[in-house]
Length: 365
Image (cartoon, rainbow, N blue to C red):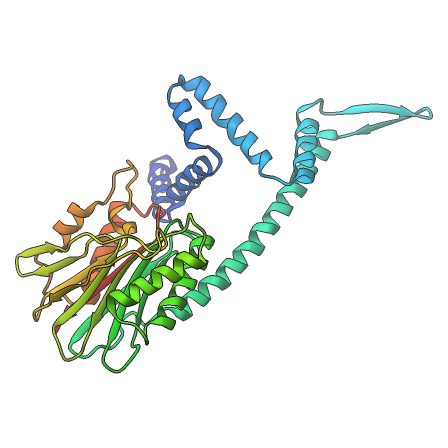
C-alpha cells in the first residue's frame, strides 16, 4: 500500500517550486515595495527606520492607510471612512420603528461600501491603463527598426520603459542623402509626463535636422526645447552622425552618460558631455570626432542600465558594465545587446525597473 505521507512533501515542494518559477512570490514582494514607495514619503521612511519593530509595523499601516485615503476624491474618501466605521463597529445594530424591530448586518453594508469604492478606483485605473497602452503603441510606431540598415555598419537599438510608457528616446533617421543620425535622449523622470516631452523632443529634432548639422543642430534644439518646455524639465542627449562611406563619426554629448568604445582587449570611455537640453538658453556644445575601426563597437546607454538595482539595493554600475563588455567586440550587435539585457535581468532578479532602459550599439563592419 502506498504511503501518501511520503509523497506529500515532494508534492508540496513541487507546487512551491512552480509558484516561485511563475514569479508569484517575487511579484508579491515587488507589489508590497511599490505600495511603500508610492504611499510613503522619503522623510516618513527615514522616521520608520528609527522605530522599534512593533511601533514601525503600526505606523507603516497607519501612514499607508492615511496616505491612501487622502489620495481619494472627497466623496470616495467619505464613503471609505463610513465603510470602515461600519465594518469595525458592532456586527449588528438594532433599531425599532413603530413597534417593528429591524436587524441589519451593518458590517456587510460597510463591506459593500468599501467594495463600491474599490470598483470606482479600479475603473479609473483601467481607463488610465487603456490610455497608456494606446500611448505606448504610438511610441512603438514612432520608433525605428531595431536593426536599421546602414551600409558599412551594424546597428542595434533598444528601449524598455520602466512603466507603461517610456521617457527615453532612441531614434535613427536620415535627414539627407549624406547623413545618418542616431540619437538617444533621456528626459528627466519617467511615466506619462516624460513620454509626452520625449515625443515633443523627437519632433523638434526631426524638424530641425534637415537645416542644421552637429553642434548647430543641438544648440538650436536646446533653445527651442528651453523656450517651449517647463523650467523643471530637461533632457540629456547623445547625438551620433555617421556616413556609409566613412569610419569617422561625429558625436555631441548634451549632458548624457559617457559612451564606451570597445576595442580589442580594451574599453575606452569617451569624455563627459556639456549642458543638458532645457537647462539654459544659448548653451554651447562641443563636437567630438571619433574613428571607429573595423570590428570596433560604440555602446551608448541610458542611466536605466547602470542604475538597475538588485534586491539588496545595489546598482548595476558602470564598472560591472565595463567588465561585461570587455573582449566582447567580436560578438554581433544583436548578441551583445541581448547579453547586456540578460545580465541586467539576472542581476536584478527580474525586479521592476527603477528607470527606463535604453541602448545603442554601433559596430563598424
